[in-house]
Length: 256
View 1 (cartoon, one colour):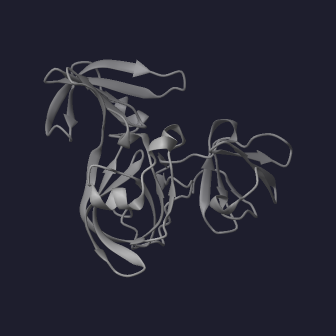
View 2: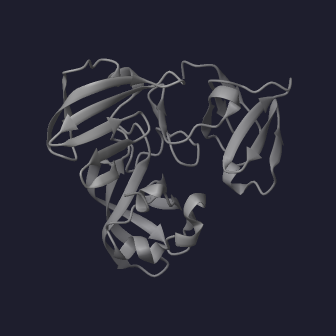
């Protein structure tokens, strides 16, 4: 790690049942679905790597907010805030580059008793980072993997947070590429667009796997059966080796 690192004595965040957890050298605080890290001097740590007692690395951004689903310093951080460990050699994400949220859909599965052995496809919500998008200018060609062709950069945008996004036009559709996700807007409306990163991956999904619903769509929350039986649905997986430890439902199943 090239960035400043901190080691703290903290249990896995997902196991915390209270709104704050005191740790050696600082405190984790929960606000809704977000986690924040505060140093023992009462100030929020910012843009730092922090190692928990479980050995996992976490990254906090502005105001101490724990980062999820991002590529930081060349390391991928998953939906649970943990950095993908280089020691987890069987993890399906180990040999691919992901910039945003990883999604998984199920192509087929077999019942193995306490778990399902599934053939899955993995996707990325993002096509690149701010640094990568900054290399483009209006009029440049941009490859759109989901469309299988090039589009033309029509606009170059800056957010208040300093992020760069691109508008790319192709066949009467405008694609808005940000470091987090991609939207396509055209005559048929607006939809989320994902980038396929890996196909025909074999993973094990425990029948009692924990599924975290999207709080914005609680009334439509999906089940494991929904994911297994309809390849249109996608969830964000957290892997340990080839086993799915957790699943996160996401707005991708409800947008469009």
